[in-house]
Image (tube, rainbow, N blue to C red; front, side, top):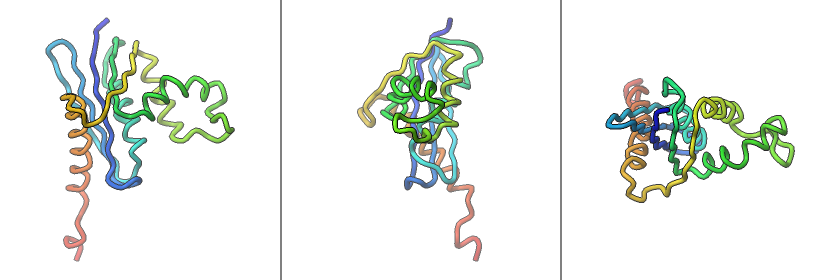
Length: 154
């Protein structure tokens, strides 16, 4: 089974607002970068999307060491998700889990692989985490380049 190291990050300008996600995947001497964005979203949704898209990009089952600087993603997948699943995607208080469709998609994507989830501190000089952050911001930048500016509509 191939071993892949992944760093993911999400970003949002305003929360909610335009958002982006980025991922750096490494296998052996190979590196692949992924990014994208959404016009109206939240930071948590972008953090989840980054992990989902990275895992879905793998063409075969792998051992994945996935690094995220999001406590929401890390704690959600490693601590909260099993209980949510048992309760029919409800919290301990009986409320619907926020972003349940993304959590289900992440759960399914992770199930194909042997994933080790690791939390890393944001903006701590970890090169691949900084690169994932830059890719997430590129996702937002590309959205903003595509969107017509007010002056262009006058």
